[in-house]
Image (cartoon, rainbow, N blue to C red; front, top):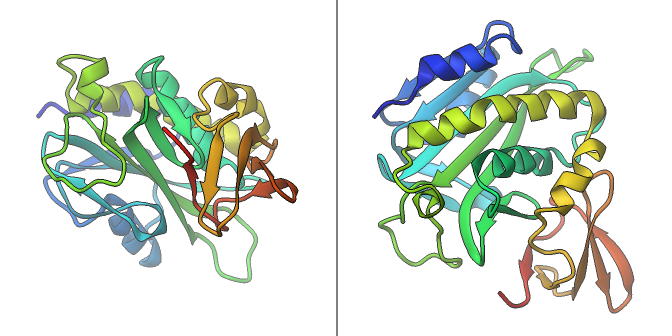
Length: 255
């Protein structure tokens, strides 16, 4: 597999001093590995790629199957100090969707969809990068998983979509080269300005907008886009509600 690591490093290093690209043949999870390192005091900026993951993770504890060559799985780790963390997964989703293909959409708060199928997911975790009593940045670990080909595993609650359907012949390394610089640009932009500058770009790719949705807390309603902080606006029977990603999960009422 040609991961195009040198090309990725050359594109990103001017933006992030000390940046490195690391490729592992196998790891339990790239997010788990970078969080382990952060807890041990290693908080250098790095893009960690796994050819294969044995225990990939998604939001709300969901698993992410990843066989060598079938998926692009990587995590970007770097210290970040935004004024407000709200909406970071949406800004990341915007950058990836725009870098990949016009048909890629974003399902709030952290999934990439093509039509009614799931192309990929985003998982963001943070760890302290300074003593608990000190002010400063946190170490952000931004994990990305993208189906390059149709996964061999079955039993998905949402049918998977492969990137090679949109980009015939694409390999995981090609997708990484497309994504890396726009992703870092977006993360740095979010750190400075928050989600607001990404709002209109997200709206253009919002899967849920003006659709009926079901919330895991039992409510239902119609999605009406997001706030400038990235909260999902849902018109429910009791009025307009703002949903944040740590409260409930959201599914379209009909695909």
